[in-house]
Image (tube, rainbow, N blue to C red; front, side, top):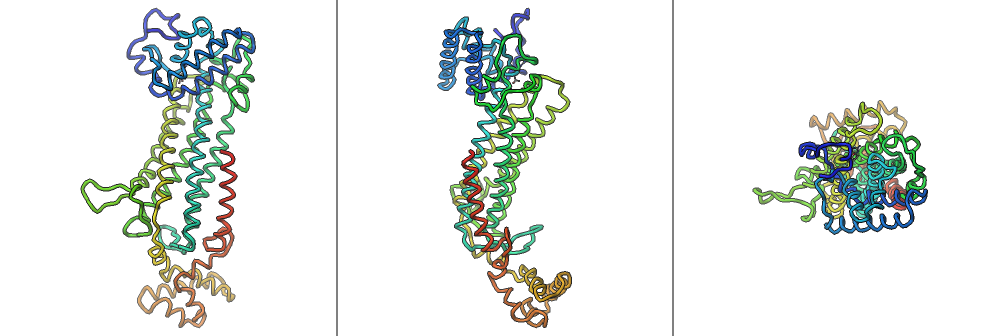
Length: 458
Ligand code: ARG
């Protein structure tokens, strides 16, 4: 078996060693980034005179071929290919001979893998942000289509005050807007090239890390070679941004489960975005929403697992750092699938405005409006709260309906009783950012503008 390090060793590596330590099974995903990194490196080597132009050409041609073989599935992996970096360098050397054997000049897999993973994270964060923006567009469309439909706004999952459905949907939309902002921040901070740091300390050869960084489209090169090869903050930060998306999707998922329950009956899922039961013929289940709830746990595990891996590691590179990749790959994959599934589910959901209104129009959901009516007449809020609370309690004890008690109360009377009529309370949320029709139509415009600005960034 041939390895990159065999010169120093008298025997082949044990099968158990390779089985335990090889990362090719998952880092093959970095192949496009590894090829890009090698192209930049070999051009840099040519630029500083370490490779002749002809050699650069030969290596680039071999990289092109390796890229095609990897894409078509024709790439033949060898037993000693412990990771994607080894596999590609081996193939380039087979194809380009002596020029290929110069590819790794001044480079270590330590700076190479850090470069690959930054390229990967940068691209995937951008792609996921674009997917999240598409989900936000669906929320916006649904908010616009919801018109004046309203439902109870809950606190403690008890009906609190009615709000427009549009308001409720956009609450999730704004949370996702912060996620997009976090992904943009993470992307900007990780936009640094580690290439040229070598194994730990740079090189005696006249490398030009600025040139390699520019070739790869990074905003800057590393400042410190030890930091460059040991920093995985960027993975932790990307994972946190993705985990926060997962948590937001889980909260949305929980609401979808509730809305579509027979108990609430606020919405029905499209057949294409619901699942059935193998035993119970009548069932229509919100499995996407439930998995959105559950996958957040998985992403939290990915994030905390990586943080635990990093904790206490001495500088600089340690093989522990190989464990950075699977959590990130898994998080990217799960978020991509989840965001798309929820976008499809929400784009086709059928709302039941009557059921939502019926739940929102229970008389006591206008209790705050009654108190505010008294406040408008000059009563201190604490007294108004107590007065209305007393009426609510008496109505619950069966003395009379709340409306009749309000009508009979000299401080309230007929005008106040009208506040209890269906569909009235929601119209009284008039303050900026509030849940009634006036502020919500302004909010929709602000959300639309925010989405357009974010879409232009991703
Ligand atoms: N597969 C390794 C990783 O992902 C590549 C770097 C290996 N470096 C080393 N010195 N053994 O971290």
